[in-house]
Length: 527
Image (cartoon, rainbow, N blue to C red; front, side):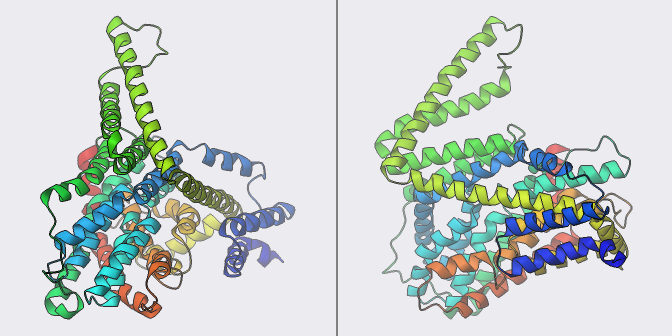
């Protein structure tokens, strides 16, 4: 009996795994297991926390301002996908590169990069590219496995290229873990680690991953030209410069507005996500109702002016003393807000008339509820696991591994890679990261310096990207299977992603031996 009580945390983890394997919903499996073992631990006096701490912890999680960015980024991505902005971009780039050997595959990767930086929604990206590009690639005799692999891998770039929901959630968890680790090490005023730091750290590795995807496809086009032939010149419709600019400028402008404002320190990730959601509505409104273009562009201009004025002037109206010039600036901002609000109304009315607004809101609500319910269950699970002595067990286990700090990091990366075969990234981020990150961030690197939480976070993000590609539960594979023609075998999809998974592993190895890929840009931007 004493042995069971001493290892109650391991029994709890095993019970959660059994419930998950039985097919119960993730959130309820985690929360139900945690509640059961919390009662057992409290009954036998081995739970080191009071049960009253559980609702307090959940409440503290739900009032986290950073997590407001999640539904805003979701609505931005779904709006771009539903309003055909992504479709136009994909068709234009396909016509632009199609005449080159391997050109269709390169266009898919390029568009996947742009959609990742402007939407970050893996499901929408994979489905859109699968519906539009896969039939074209098959028509022009592309290898089915190569075509499927390129689409699935490019669609998952939204996991690692900012602004990414994975990076938002991972950044929030790592921020808490880093502060906890620093406090336990005696540093009572640690530097903050923000989602913006992780965005900056993931940018170069994400672009490097795109370059590696493209390099592989160019090599295939050179050495195995029959796998990715060019489109016949008599069947390809040349694209004009105007069409290229028309397709490229809107998403690039949105990327600049969202990512540029975060990296430039102008806006927090949550504020930038709000700008992105409004910008996506504007782009959708212009795309579907060209006659309202002037009104919506005026709204976009007013939004830009609001951002500039908020930086240049103190616009707080709660101050006791406001001089006349500042008061006039506040009135101007009121007028600009009215212009933005009217443009949002016009865009939303257009989306509603096209029967798009309701599906956008329904999909956003569905995804957001899923994320937060899993977050609550995982928070409950992690808290009880620690209360039963699980954190001490993890600390002792990682400290006892050969290879010191790097051995411990390697073991965690390996665990996350294999968990990605069976679990979604949400479960890994919310369950595994809060348990292992505080322990890892207390371990010194071989040169005696502290471990960089940004480097660790980017390593985890690239590793988590593979969870969307690895069978049997890779979600990108499910999305692609759902829209692929019946002539495409599931085995061809699985075979096609193997080279891209190997490329991601190579990217992890490069990042492992060259941490500056993740730490250089945050250091340049934030110091």
